[in-house]
Length: 410
Ligand SMILES: Cc1cc2nc3c(=O)[nH]c(=O)nc-3n(C[C@H](O)[C@H](O)[C@H](O)COP(=O)(O)O)c2cc1C
Image 1 (spheres, rainbow, N blue to C red):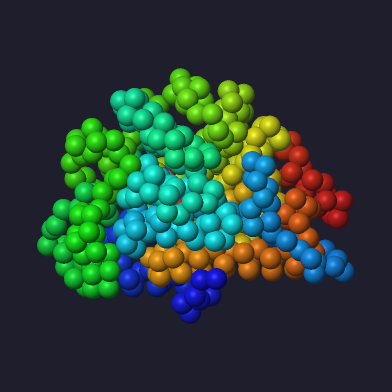
Image 2: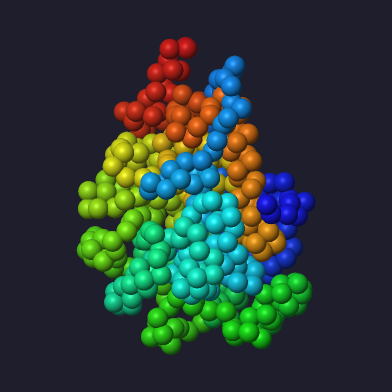
């Protein structure tokens, strides 16, 4: 179990991370795009969903374990891909992967991570998934697919919500770039955080050199020029259904599409062979003013039914958030910042602590709901306090059940 680091919830880990890492880096992880309306709404939306509890249920044998793609996991959580884990802590990707393995959940390595996928597979193991961004030269991305296949990754996560980089002005202002370049501003920032400077940056410099994208093929790495973080050359604005079909053909294992918020798109992806859909707004990092995944989750669940596995992410910080999403029809939740705060706060122990917090919170909520198993969760455990969460989406079974209960009571 992870040391508690005197952190009792994810927000405590966030505060600890804030003290440890340079401000520019912290803001890169923590903040959203433009005016951060999406970022705020991703949290606010949970407040308008309330629990309905059952009592006099024996919950002494409750268990938050669940099955994802036929494999039993200790809880319905997956670590989402986040390119900069390796900057939060020395070899942070490995720390996250090991923490996921110890907690019994999958870990997703990002195209933009600082540790080569082969090393993560060899040194951390566990249930590993690989997230893919597509370069304009498709063959470079397909090289990564072949490497992921050869290294035993179990699922490929195709991210589709990055046709353009989000507009994050603070990154430019803070002067944090990848590969790193030194400016007066970020050097001062680093000097003010000596534990990070010596424990992370200097350790890289005396071992493997300046941290950079270790999964990029040599050709792509050679062309890399320093750009503000989040504006790297990872994207192509020509990504389309043909790319999805090509990936489906090339990848023999589970294929998850990440970043869909439209039921028609999700159903189309499943029709063309997707095994999973991750309903996500990229943690409020790409388009400001976008809907929160929770707001469209029920219609997507309805559109794809049981034909594919539904993941959801963006804004999850509490076990109660996770349980609400599951009751609305998701099969599992992906967390991005929660475990990044953890790893920044205390490496492996911090990441472990974040996962332990989720496990404890989910178990507690199950008890208080009067529910023993994840598969028993459903809309009968919820009441939507904000009618707009329901009103524009008539006919969804999940929310119709809530409406029916409320109507019967009125
Ligand atoms: C610092 C950071 C880096 C990220 N990098 C990637 C990435 O490389 N690929 C990707 O598909 N999503 C990336 N994401 C998005 C996450 O996978 C996930 O959708 C998001 O963090 C979920 O929101 P949450 O942070 O509120 O949990 C990143 C998110 C953060 C915070």
